[in-house]
Image 1 (cartoon, rainbow, N blue to C red):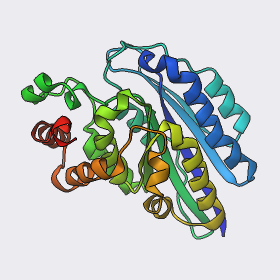
Image 2 (image 1 turned 90 degrees about the vertical axis):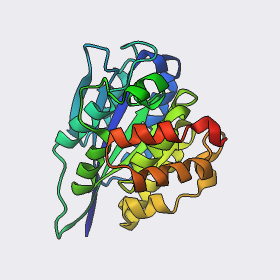
Image 3 (image 1 turned 30 degrees about the horizontal axis):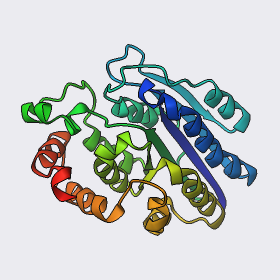
Image 4 (image 1 turned 30 degrees about the vertical axis):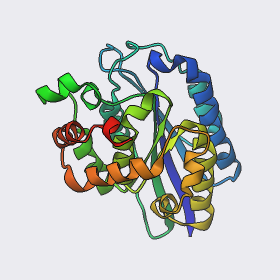
Length: 263
């Protein structure tokens, strides 16, 4: 059976990650380069997003089989939009990812679909601002991100979230829950290229599913040289998955389970 994969990379281009942006692009290159070498049917798309307080929000580069084309897109990205603490347009980026022309499974092809979301901060200020949490009124006019995960599952899209530390640790538990609900995983940037390249190659060569591979990641490899602590985050993420149905539920959960009280 022919094996194929569609991979969409959603890239945070807010100015708050400018100091890390060269490293981020290098890590993406380290994911893409080895998987394009194996000469399998792999398509790549790139979505650039910024903060919700920026008039410019997303740029969409549709699927291509050309590694050179994808690299040119990547080389031309810049982290220069939005305020330093602006809320990320995560839901906008995922909505655009859902609109891409994903290929479907068929009897002649083993096909997997992966979204890699790379971000350096929370999708909404409500996740970290206690005053806004108490108002229970999301300032982001966007799709409910938690409900959107159901759409990803329906379309057989696996979400992996790559966090740019240290700013992302305020919400790594939420990102862990969001990714895991689709069969994916949260991974710190420092370890992302090694882990994701290995998973993608294994899926495309051995015809395992993405969810199978993510379930069997060595958590020591995820934590290595990072601020991420899987045991602590996993308990919180699993609780969110079991108890929350909307972003309003998430905000209430975070209000009742402050992170600092559990360290």
